[in-house]
Image 1 (tube, rainbow, N blue to C red):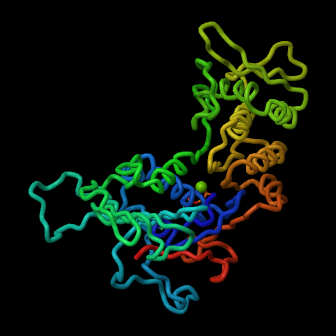
Image 2 (spheres, rainbow, N blue to C red):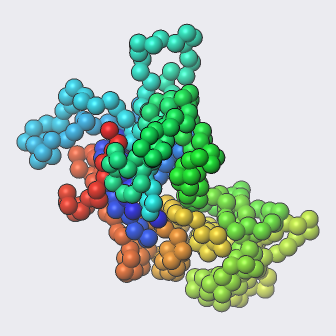
Image 3 (cartoon, rainbow, N blue to C red):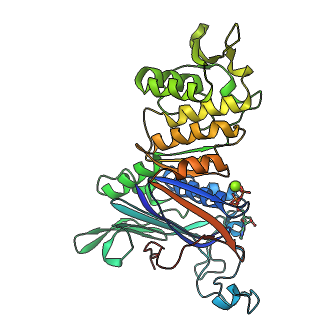
Length: 393
Ligand SMILES: Nc1ncnc2c1ncn2[C@@H]1O[C@H](COP(=O)(O)OP(=O)(O)OP(=O)(O)O)[C@@H](O)[C@H]1O
Ligand SMILES: [Mg+2]
């Protein structure tokens, strides 16, 4: 489980340290930074998949993702006594992401290549605007202390602590590769592979498509599917898998909770294709996935995601309420709460009935974001509420 998430210099997040629980609910006005925080977690996930630099490029490049405000907002700027203005930078511009987990913690910092640096390359690279991974650290325990550092990547070099000494694990790490790619399989670095596997088991579900061509509406070749694909293409197989090796009673309950009298059927078509069908009260034949309403389809997708027989270490749902009628939201909230018994959950939501259902749960960690002079802050978070966090220097 993650206990702390820290993000700095990423879009509207100048510097944010959040305490995390099993069930985390992120709310806030439009533009307060909920999606930015969600994307920051996605970027962290990309470090273990080998795609963090590409993911930043897809977002428009590192330069545009940097916090657009001044390096620090002074108290007098915040109170309005003096106008907001930038000064000379004290530190190099870095996008920083990190988390503290049960055993190990991790932080990464990314920056732009130094132009005109002393060591001019023999051949200039066409990728001179690519972000570079400048530093990565893995340490034991929550808050960073130099003494608890276990693995340290600085530029192209990775070192690992061995007793009282440091062992160099790699010297020519490309600036676009995270240490997970380079030494994630090295049996000499169990912390790295442990964290990599942990991060790879995070699962993101973000706005399932429900248009006529949506993958979830098409019959698909069915194989056992304990994990629903993030675009929902294997919905029928995932639901059938829950029936066979998961919590079939919870599946039936989730359907009748939302659509009283309705029954879910998985139709096995010729050629091994699986299709979802919903038999509803009053109809002479079941409706196929292509005939279901957007909200019904999305609800089925969320059911399949949340009742997974193989719970991830962290499940992230971005605005799962999209196109669901408010009456369905308490049922969805109960499913999310049940999932949080087996997996850490992160839900971003605007929907008051979903928020109300989740907030009733004693373990709900409700995080309300707001903007203060353009930067995302946590409503009501004082200095003392902020978890201990220090970026590796
Ligand atoms: N580089 C940047 N520097 C500062 N602020 C930025 C930067 N890029 C985006 N923003 C701000 O971040 C905000 C967008 O935040 P985000 O998309 O996370 O909002 P949200 O809480 O998800 O809102 P919604 O509920 O509308 O989805 C916008 O207000 C935008 O002005
Ligand atoms: Mg958003």
